[in-house]
View 1 (cartoon, rainbow over the protein chains, first blue to last red):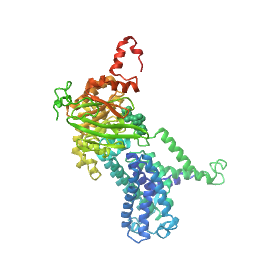
View 2: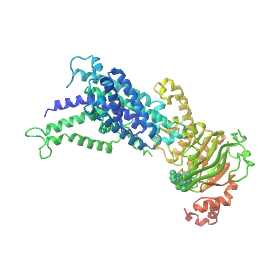
View 3: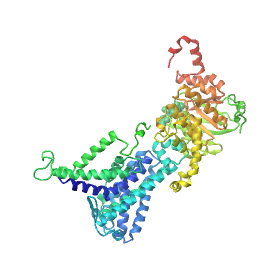
View 4: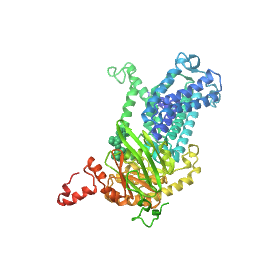
Amino acid sequence: MDWSSMVGGSLQQALGAPAIIYCLAAIGLNVHFGYTGLLNFGQAGFMAVAGYALASLVATWGMSFWVGLVVGLALSVVLALLLGIPTLRLRADYLAIVTIAAAEIIRQTIGSVTLLRYFGGQDGLQQFVGTFQGLNPFHNSVTIGITTWRPYDFWLLVVGWTVVALCCIVVYLLMRSPWGRVLKAIREDEDAVRSLGKNVYAYKMQSLVIGGLIGALAGFMSALQNSSIVPSQFATDTTFFAYTVLLVGGAARVLGPVVGALIFWFLITFLDAFFGDATQGAHPLIPTWIMSNDQASVMRLIVMGLALMLLMIFRPQGIFGDRRELAIDAR
Amino acid sequence: MPAETTPAAADDVDPRSLAEVPAEPGAAKPDPILVVDSVVRRFGGLRAVDVDHLEVQRGVITALIGPNGAGKTTLFNLLTGFDKASAGSWSFDGHPTHSLPAYKVARLGMVRTFQLTRVLARLTVLENMRIAAVGQRGERLARAMVAPLWRAQEREVTERAMALLDRFGLAAMCDEFAGSLSGGQRKLLEMARALMVEPRLVMLDEPMAGVNPALKQSLLAHVKSLRDEGMSVLFVEHDMDMVRDISDWVVVMAQGALVAEGPPESVMADERVIDAYLGAHHDVSLETVEAEIADETDEELAADD
Ligand SMILES: Nc1ncnc2c1ncn2[C@@H]1O[C@H](COP(=O)(O)OP(=O)(O)O)[C@@H](O)[C@H]1O
Ligand SMILES: [Mg+2]
């Protein structure tokens, strides 16, 4: 068993684009769920709208990369308004239902045969990262410790983590302000906040828009990651992985999503490599009567699910959460 | 401002302005801050609230009493924008408020507390107070990220919050999570928080429920001090001693409607009021019940409830 290559490969994922994508998606969800208590189960929808806006404007309509970014952000704001206007006055669960449905509608629409000319159906779109590639200052592979990065991947990593850092700073600045205090209060009890003269609906809408914008950044990263975009990148489990990342790190903590993403992607890649390795060859470490090599591929999800359950039971506040908060029965 | 707001006469405030008011349901007041007209709230077939006319006098403490299920909380919810009336209109200080959302009602200066306290559990006691200040610059998204734009105001808000916490005996707990407070302390915090909004009319829904006797006294004093500072108070209460002790005027509801109104002494002797209570619940400490109990001093402890 090649431990160093397993650890190296896992680090590569934990530091690279996959972790960045889910980290950004989770930062957005942190604004929604962690700070405001909004149940957005359609973060993948925000990612899809932004990612496809960028890809299709460049690849299909021949516009500039920068126009694609701006339109992607603008459309994610529009999506937030569309989702929020009918639901944010209602009970919290309505937003959850509407967002999860909207994300699926978006994915199915984008992948449909009818719109094949614009969005490329299930094969998606390619050839829209030229501008981004052109800006890449790295021309050789970069080696850090036991990880080695191709120039494009390293460029993506630098840009990605810079964006993550900026988002964390924005979230930090917002959440320590009186504005952030209103969001946290809404999470605790929105009727109490109303009784104190705050327009709860407007604050929820602002929160939905800001979290959605950060979700859009995750969508851009998702499109840039493989220089191609396909609908399956934005399936419902994308949102749930982002929630997992958030809960592992700890909701309502600025750095929760960052820590969560690193741990999540390290573990999930490592487990995959481990079970793959352990079931391979003529004399596998794990005998074939326990599991075959084919079966091993789902082991990572089983173990991650188990770990998440244990985490929720023994440390529901996440890695970063505050124990004191747990002692409080919230209502 | 009515004469009784002078702080010196805290205990024997004579609401002179109410002396001429007839003790009948819907009586007109000389200087009403809240005027309610034909408000109806139906829940299916039930008319939970059906009030023809009600005026609440400015600068005094008005008690709203009535048996459980009389519709007091529902009326509070309607007046403060937390529920929608089936019909009716009302105005606060001359502004029609029946179609306003709850937050606008609060901003006009009509602030309520809840029967079941609603503290913001995972915010500290101090944050619970700070959030209630109105017109905070840092609550605007566009300015939130730039602390220098709101830091000075935040300092003022904090000072005001600490002064109020001090007055309500919660200053020592300012950094605790509000969720860790006792039931009585939560009631205190909720009242103090309502004052951060700088209301003109404070509406308290059962401020004494579940509060231990020691805290009750201090809560009583706090409610009185609101009046002394010129605020109007409308409160729901079951504790008749408290009602008698601090209220200048009592309004009685039963089955959604007003059944009586008047100064505390006369209202509590009113047949209709006694009927309303005894008809619904026998465990309410009205004067008659108390008199009965006093007669049978030996069996006092064995009495019902
Ligand atoms: N949301 C609701 N749905 C149905 N019935 C309600 C609702 N709220 C209150 N009621 C009914 O309205 C009546 C008045 O209730 P409430 O205002 O809470 O009384 P009070 O505060 O005087 O004890 C009660 O019969 C209660 O069951
Ligand atoms: Mg009630």
